[in-house]
Image (cartoon, rainbow, N blue to C red; front, side, top):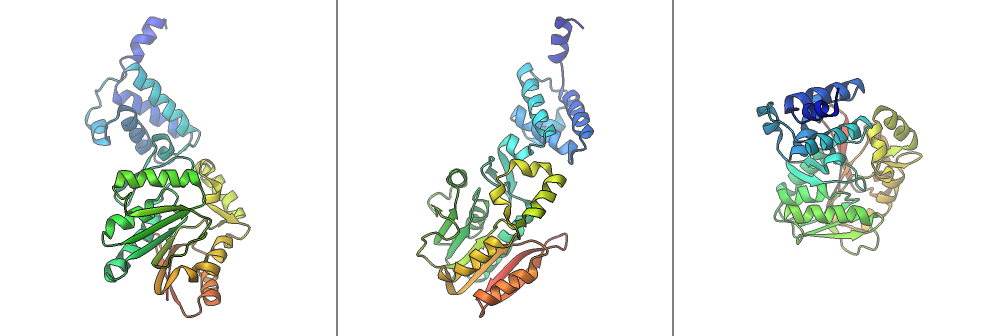
Length: 296
């Protein structure tokens, strides 16, 4: 084929053409969500929504759009997540900016937001919230949007880069004046106490993390420190419970995302460090234990 013919062919590729090609490429790599990924990445490339992509299969792409889209597909082939490619992830009805300094918000973590928000609605006198290890800020910001009556919200993270992402998301959500972001390992030098503490701490053991990377190579692009807690996976929970009493009001409540096999370990930690507290567990839609709720 001559350069002229190739140039002409490239300049007459439609949405239908490039989607078909992209899905074939992704399917060869046995990636999940082939059609969805191809459509989302094309919508991102064209700065349109998916509805436009599905409604205009005849739309002809320009050369730069084709080049950008192919680069996106190649990134996906190498297991870069769609969220990191587009810089966005939807979570609890909001769109959050993400990059490789923060854990990508998971749909299952929405249960943590749901339980905390429901509790705060049922207890309107509770006015303060602490989010430990905020990452992208998606948990604190989602609860803040759900509960406008909250008067004090603090979110901590050990990573300055993660806090920059969270602050950007707070500005986009219109919550920058409602939340104080503070660099801290766990509770740091916090002097405040709170009615409600939420945390999605790293809880995979080193062995579980290695297994997860084999099953989901995308995890390798996320900050390991936001996923892997150490040899047992309980190291940060141990640290959390050892010090949380200083930050929790006498009748406060803790909401934690945990692993499915960690129920007994969490019960042990509560009994050891918060012996007067009650703990219950909430399962997600797949019937796996996902959230621990500790009530003083």
